[in-house]
Length: 368
Image (cartoon, rainbow, N blue to C red; front, side, top):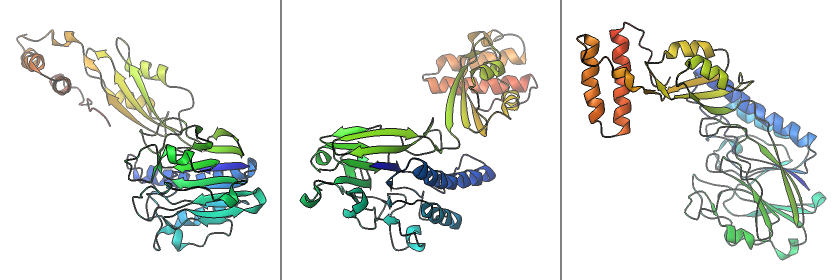
């Protein structure tokens, strides 16, 4: 039996770090994920599609999103199961209840485990829904009914694996080992698990299929599961259009623009980058110059300056000049600083002060 397992699309995310226009573009690209899922289900010849919650980021979905959700799922010619999670929890007023889904789509609506038999696959799919922002342990005490013991038994549910203190359907490894399930398809955690096993039950969660911020960096995937009694394999397939990355660049004793361009991988034009500059510099960095040199290389990017001033920046301290007087006073404050954060704040002030004294453009913002 082949399963397409996805979760945590978080459609209609606000993308607060982007401009209004780019945020709207990203939401449209998120909807395109739905059609790529449908195409993947066909190309991989999936027998069933499991969507383990948080398809939507909130209960305030746009009309276009609901329409695309229905349209894309109607393109899938096999059963589709949706287990609402803590972001898209089920109620009579939620987006799922406001549209009519095609007959192949089953949305779990209750906060208790239900079973759906798939005769053609000789399998049973179990699932439940969040009906609020939090959920107690829904899987505790679950056991496959004796009448289904010889079938392939699969559960699709949103929950947090291995954390008994979680407010989001804590899933116990020990309880699942006793459940009789062949495969547990989870959502909620945004970093992919790979294929796990507890007792005779295989477990995985795919993570989010596309990053939405710098806490979701790198390639993202959905899972293709090949499952039979006593055997399971997992393949990760990327359907994302963009990714987030953090790039650290040491600019010590080199031109920062050259250092950045030498560190950037190929084909970044679709991606969102945070570039963090580190090392020691003689003077403040011209971030505007750096930004201009990068403007065509990314969909969006941020520059963060974490460089430190070299000690020789203080060499003019004590000179009979405004610059010398300023540096002398700031050096005393720097030397008496008790924490690294205080020193960084003083370094930032020195950069701004020297820019003003030298009548240079004030470009020493920390991040923009």
